[in-house]
Structure formats: structure tokens, C-alpha cells
Length: 568
Image: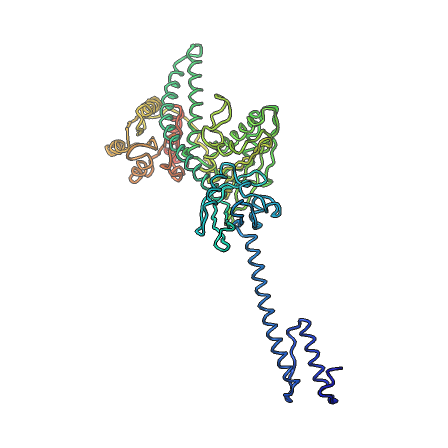
């Protein structure tokens, strides 16, 4: 070997070994093994000097490799962060606005491969009405970023609102390219729309509740008057049939006011805990009659009980409205599937999901956006009120849930109502006390309502039933009458009144008369009547409009229970 001849002499075995080791080190370093190191000897000759030099070279190369690996890792991370950033990045030629670069997020948002985007004009991917404005903005762009909003159109035809920031990239003092950052704000716009929708529903609900309150008072008077007239006519009298028509029309109008109150989530709920599956099964016959013979009702119910705390009339109304909506969407027939299931939400909360899926004509996006708005309908005049889904929405919100729709033209519609799962499946409703004798015995009753017509109706109904009635027009007048004595055995009071309302009046009287029985009457209680009051013994709620006989019967129930100390 050449390494064995130095200065023309023959090297000793030790020197040969050291040269072999030096040669091996050179080969290892040449092969990229920068962690290799030589071992100098105490001789400190030229071989040791070469060994030390190679060790220093190896250390330098190893440090450079580590630095390069770190740089390459950072570059990879940077490229990955660029490609998959939440924001969209692209660069366009200043003159033509053709794409010269973009990240994967930009391509994925548009639903196109990156190679298919490059060299295409950015304006091709904007809504037509947005193109002139963005073109003007980019033409005037400078080193200071220009910001604005626009609408991208993807390959699937969906529009996506975006915010953008554009800045110029200069080359030797001349603007060469424009760097653009875009952010999809579809979620924010959706939340804004939901907020506007909620505010609109809240405003309409308040208006509807106020109208329903006054209307219920009028209906109560009409219903009481027609009932009194009806009982004075014998079966052969021609006016008897007319009073029945008036009665039916009044009850129909009462149903409409309940829809208005449900719309505003102002209807006083009298909830119990009911099994959703049982309620659906019990309503099946009614729903099938509503659908007609051309539409098949399919039930896909969760195998376990689904306890739900809700007013049962509200739940029936939701089922009926969902059925009516599906029926109108399938004029040629089809099927409606009612499905119940559970889902786990955040914080371990379990929700019940009631979904109604039809095979009807479906809805376009512009119709879907307004489907739950009050009085919005695509039906002919007189064919629908436009309250069906709006009422379902109001009932769901009142019960602590939500309602959402999904639909496409020709692909049917699915409506999902999500409601909280209750703790138990035992109804909270109470059985009425059986009646023995409906005639009163002169018990003193205090009747309070700010509506003179309703107050007179209750006065006549209860006086005719044998009670001594003291009417009052408001809470202060009632309190004064109560303090004058003698004691009253039953308070019948409206809930919503100017000044002192019904619940406040009852609680004031209970301080000195804790056993006083109370009937709250209202067609619109709002948030005035705490449901805990209705759980108190000797307390009942009567919804307006009501028949005079209903009031007399309920008064008798409470007074009999009070006399016999029967729990209620």
C-alpha cells in the first residue's frame, strides 16, 4: 500500500496500524459517516496531526449535517403549514391575474386539483357580480395590504363568502405579483344568519303573544256566552245548531292562538315526563289519517324508552305539524319515516333526536333558508298559514331543544328536532279529584281579571253554580277586598295584569292564608307564572279560552279537596 511507504523507509508494525486506521477514517468520512473519529497517540507525529485534523473536519461536517437536517425539517413544516393552513394562500400575476401559486387549502376549498388551477384567472372562481370589484381592488393594490370581502364559487357550484388581504410583491421596483390571503367565513355568516333569524323569531313571537293574549280574552267571553245561550235552547230549536257552529269556530280560533303562543314560546307549558316512543305510537292512527292513503308512515323507534319532559299537547302538535308538512310535500304519494334516537352532545349531555324524513319534492336553498319563518309558505293562498314549522321551532326552543332542516330539490326533506333527555319516565300529571256534587254551598270566591268581559263571565258562571263571588279588576282591588273580610276560600285570578299580577297577588295572600286554593287563568302567561307554583297543593291552571262549566267544575274540585283534606 502507498500508505506503507513514507520517506522511502519501511514503517514499523505500529506505524502501519496507525496508517491503516487513518485510511479507514478517511474512507468512513468520505462515505458520509461523520460520527467517525480517529484516536491520536502520545507520539504526536504527522499521523496524529492528520488524525486530529480529520476529527475536526468530521465534527464540522456533523454539525453542518445537523443544521441542514433542522433546516430541512423547518422547511418541511413550513411547507406543510403553508399548504394546509386554515387560510387560503395564492399569488397571481399582476397584469393578467392568473394564478402562479396556491396552497392545498385553496385548491381543496374550490374542489379542484392544484395543477388544474395554475395559470387560470382568479376571477374565474368568483361570483359574476363580485368580479369587477375585486379586479379594481387588485389593480390598485400596493405594498400596503388591501382588504375586502368577496364570494368564491367552487367546482360544486357552492358559494363561499371570504375575506381577503392582498399585497403587492415587487421585483426591482416594479410590481410583479400579488400575494393574496383568503379566509372562508361561511361559518361566521351562518351564525350571523342564525342570530338574525332568532331575533326575527323573537320579535314576531312577542307580537304574536301580545295579540294572542287579547284575542284569548275575547274568545273566553264568546265561548262563555255561547255556552250560556246553548243551554237555554231545547234540542229542536233552530238556533241550537248555530250555537254549536259558533262554539266549534271559537275552539278553532283558540287553536290558532295556541299556535301563535307556541311560536313566541310564550304558551304556558304544563309538562310531564313522557316516553317519546309511546307518544308516537299512540298518535300513529291520527298521523296516518292525516297523511292519507297514498303516503306510508314508517316508524323507526329507539329500542329503549326515551323520557322527555314536555307538554304532551305540544308534542302532539309537533308530530302533527311535521306530518302535515310531509304530506304537502308529497302530492303524488310517498313515505314518511319517523325515527327516534339518542346522541351525546358536549359535556356528556344526552339528547333525544326526533327526525321526520319524507320522499317529497324537497326544497331549494332559497326556500330552505326561510322555511321556519312565521307565515312563510310556498302553498297557494288559503292552503296553509305558514306557521307549521315555525310553531315546531318555538315548541322545541321552549322545551330546551333545537330544530334543523336539510333538503334538496327532488331528494326529500329531513327535519330533526333535538330535545333534552329527561331523568325519569313517570308522568308528572295529576289525576283530578272525582266530583260528587257540582253545586256550591255559598263558599266565598274572589275573582280577579283586568278584562271586564272575562271577569263578568267568571262571576256569572260561579254565581250560577252556587258560590258567593266578589269580582275585582286588578291585584290592588283584590287585595283590598280580601283584607276587608270575611275570608275567601278560593282565589280565581288572571296571570297577566297591569300592576300586581296574579302570581304576586297569590303569594301575598298566602303569607297569612297558606291554605287558600287558587285557580290561575290565562291564555298567555309569559314568564309571569313559575311552574313551581303549579306543583303547590290546592293550585290549578285553566287555559283561556275556557267554558264556564270548566271553571265551575275546577272550582268544585279544589273546594271539595280542601274540605276533605285530599292531597292534590
